[in-house]
Image (cartoon, rainbow, N blue to C red; front, side, top):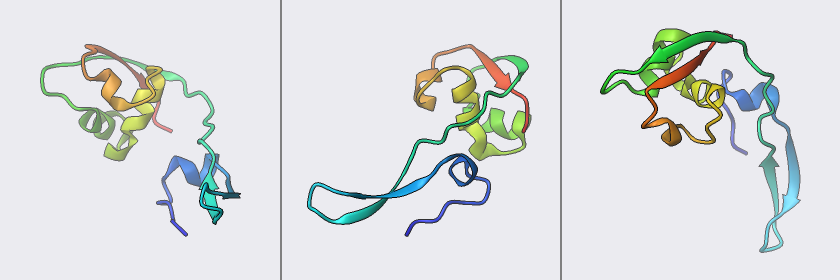
Length: 93
């Protein structure tokens, strides 16, 4: 069974369940993490070369928290934000 880091959103906000894959094997699956909405700290005007992990490290004290910035900007994946200059920044939580 796979384990998540203690700080992972899946530890607190997702559930695991047993299901059957297309080969008939019983496998453990995880639901999407259903996170509560976070208030906004404000907006960041991105400069050339600034990456989401750097912004997450600065604002959220967690470079792996880049997904929180993606979520605050209604982006399913961080790649969607590659061309955006203005980014909403969530409050550190």
